[in-house]
Image (cartoon, rainbow, N blue to C red; front, side):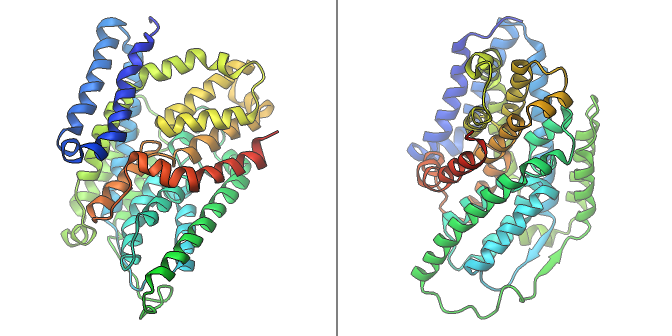
Length: 418
């Protein structure tokens, strides 16, 4: 296959620019035409690869990765949308911290998508008396990203590592200190902000204690479909058996869930439709960007790159590309740079670098809406609830830089600086 021309990265840059600026500068126009922009730019890259490069292999890989991604994310969205948690009481700062911590733990069992879709609506209802954008942003940071750093189920990049031969419990064994520090720091920052905002709101004491208030759990049958989704993650078959099982679970959930449960959740397909369209454009247009990274990563990394280089390199690109293919690109680059014959040898000789790639991909995926699949879905649900969410750029300068970046720097300083 011919090497893509560097100019072929332009559609990807234009798509990122449109996603960042159009909702701010032309919100109504973007809502009407975002599908045309995303799919149109994707079509330009696709035409170039087909007729210019005659490169069917990367197209096939990209399509397969996209279908796996959208089936997993969409399936978990549908199944979790059939589970309704009725909450009572009001979220106080301490209880909110406990709620987010439980969400971070569940993210490793249900995946960040499953945990986020299951908990985001109860989270909004619990804090509806004083809901602010920071409630949703920190939910994205902790539940939809940082939380899933301990198992291959937790986040898609770690699942790709599992498919590359990284043992299932290896991530937990090596990444728990980073997880504990990162989640702990974010919870501490959130508590400070939430405590201050509660004081500013000057609301009267809640009539019921949220810890002991009666919570309702409806749609229990969907727990079965959720288990099918999670079991399908471990199926690795070239004929889309994994995706077929996920699709069957999603359809079974949707058609067996009571209408009242969907209505209680305000369930509709708009959030997953928006994610599916935008990420279709992202997965196609980022093909030349990933190809360029694969060619030049050894030169950029040097002969003896440190764990910190992989942490920042994987992390920064994961915030602008989807973190799953970015993880795979750096994992493959590390294997090539150090000359490891297989994953077992790589983990024995360069475990710190693999940890840097793993933590960087998961943690930095929280920095933007496109860094990880659940981010955009949580935002879409918050938009439906009329919560004034920050734009793409505003998320970065108002939350990611002042709140998230210090945590990322501290994690680097403690674990990857040497």
